[in-house]
Every structure is written in structure tokens, then in C-alpha cells.
Length: 500
Image 1: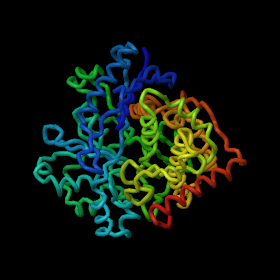
Image 2: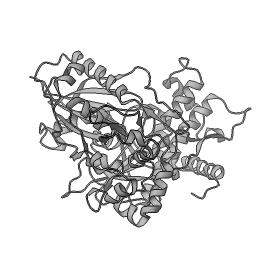
Image 3: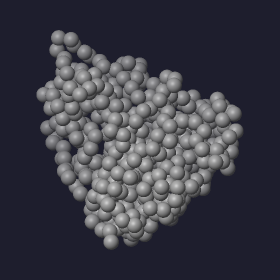
Image 4: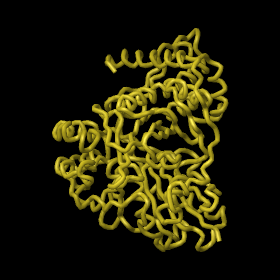
């Protein structure tokens, strides 16, 4: 009989399910729903919301698809792992009914609340204890609800992150994780528990916060009702949960100090692991509890995030005519433009406030446009070079914190499918790039295998992880790409009148 593991990845664009054969370490079937990107509602400028029931709808569709496609028999599915978009806020009442749309990661309505809390609590508390400013994270979003929707807030029974919600729908159990609490900036790293000062400052009822469980652990079993809806056999345990960036790092076996993972989907990230609680004095990058953290063996993840990444690339595609050009054609066209895009510069910060810009709403900017010189190929290349430049800006903040950044791992997906993007990333940051055949859903499945004890250790869980390609930098390209970055940074300073 096969031993199968199901990974579920709740993104803001799609929901993906992946079925992993634990004996081979290989994914046997995967599927993302819907075919087009999920809707993000923006009732007001700077807002971003999604209906959690929409996530559940596509969880049901994707789960049924992979289970039927693989002809899964009773007893073969051993465990479920859940990865999810970070920093979202889901509120439910005592009947586990959703009270309002989820305020998701790229919503910026709570920026001023986080700034005030930073002033009230003081940097001498926030930085060493929270390793972050309260910022625009989940706790600040909850405070916004308390201030602006008091009648609704009075009905709250539990608060949770998107992955906690899906786990609740599957098992009926309302739980969270230590890494989840840290990503919401509820966690005091010195006390190794929920921050009493954050709870008190924000007027949060401590009973709203679910019990925290380790990322790898038995976290409830699929109920009969959930089985009827999803096709997953009743009694199968949920045994892993983590936010998308810690999980992406885990998916790439980034678990030791000095190891790095990167993504370039709708948003772009670099996530580095360390065993000491590092922080940036300006909170432009953020430190959270990593999935393998224990009191005895601490593990932290430092996250650099740029909201305006793949979303800019998809905007360029739509601008050029949906259906008339695909990404491969775009990349081929962009490759014909010179390094530096003929002086055309893209500032990609057009998807909400940016943490590396100290939660300022910079916006996206196209600079240096020459109507007699520039065409589609320059715009495509400038967009990709601008995205990498933004990541490099954060990358150098991480280096200044003392992180040793030499080799970066990524899944061969999204913008890492673009030769322009890969070459720019490797040379602008002077790193080796390793590309793997994996994704967040596969990682969640491997995590579930650890959680149920099917894998005896983390190394065993990654026996089937396949390295597809290693890209080494060539020193002759260091100078031209450094010129691109320097020009980009100068342009950014000019539009913001900032010293960065």
C-alpha cells in the first residue's frame, strides 16, 4: 500500500494541492485552482481583502482533483500539511462562522496603528522582544477592527491566520503555531511566549488567541463533514502548518544558519535562517520563528519582502495585450534589450506599502522613458531589473545585519523561469543560485510526514528533492549590474527625496 501525503498551499492568487509519495519523495499529482487568479477586493485605497470561504471552496476542488487523479484508496493518505499566505487576519464567532472578509498580507490600512504602537511600546522593547516594529502585521490589523468595527469585534470568539482557518475547516480544531504568532507580531522572543505588552496596548482579549502548537505536530483529524466536502478520508491527521515564506524555505531544505531561500511570485522574498535573534533597527526586514524552532535549539527566519514583484510582470503582460503574448515570448523579447534597459528604470513598489521602504506607499514609477528610443523589449527588461534591484536593496540590509549570503535556493517557477531575472539576480547579488523542482504544497506535504513521524528526521523528508540547475555568477557581469543597481537606487532616492 502506498504512503501518501497531501500538501495544501493557500495563496492569494490560487490554492494548490500536491500529493507526495512518501516512499519516493516525489510528487505524483498537483493542481492549482482556480484557472485565473483569485479576486482580491479593495473597497478603499490601500485595502486588500479576500473571503476565507473562497479559499475553502478551492481547497475542496483541488483536494478532490488530486485524490481522484491519483486513485487514492482508503488508508493510503497518511497526513496533511498546510502552507498559507502570511499576515492575514481571519475572525470567527463561537459557531466558527467567518465574521468579515480576511484582511490579507498586502492590505495597508493598519500602518499608522503599528507606528503608534511602536512609539507607545518603545524601540527598547519592540526591537529586542518582538524583533520588529508592530508595523502593518496581523496584530495591528486586529486593532483596526477593534477601533473601526466595534460591534463586529464584540462577536469575535477566535482570531486566526489563513492556514489556521483551513485547518479549522478540516478538523474543527481552532489552533495556531508559534511561527504564526510571531508573524502576526504577537510573540515575545525573550519571554518565548505571547507578548503581554502588545495584547495590553492593542486592547486584545487574550482568549481570542488560539492555543499554539509546533509546526510539526498532530493538530487534529479530518472530520466526517470535511471528508464529505473534500473527498479526504475522515480521520487523516493535519500534522504541519506554516506561513508561505517559512514553508518555502522548508520546501527547499533551508533549515540551518546561513541557508537562504527566495521566491518571486506576486511578491518577492529572500528568507535566511539564523540561530540568534537578529533584527534590523528600522524593521525593513523582519524576523520570525522558523518551522524547526525549539527552546533547546532556536531557529529564526529573517524575511525580506517586496510586494511589487510578479504583479508588475503580470501588469506588463496585460498592458501588452492579454492572450497576445505569453511569458516566454516576453522573456525572449526582453533579452534582446541591453543590460540596463537603455537607461529605462522601473521602481516596482505599486502593490501597497513596502516594509523595506519603512512602510511608505512609494508607488510604481517608470523613469527615463525616451519615446524615440524605448519599446516593449526595454520595458520588459526594465521591469525585471527593477524588481531584482528592489530585492537587492533588501538583500544588502540583511548583509548589514551580519548574515552571510552566498548561496540562494529557489523553486524553478514564477519569475525564476525568466533567464533575464535569473541572470540579473545572480550577478547583482553576487550569489550562486540553486533551482529545485519543488513548491510550497510539496513542502507542506513533507512537513506533514515529519509531523506524523513517517520521516524520522528532516533529511529523510527531503530524499526526493531534485536539484534542477545551479547558476554561478560570472565576475565580468558584476560591474554592469552594479551600475544598474546604483542607477536604480539613485532614481529611488530622487523620487522620494530620501537618503537610503
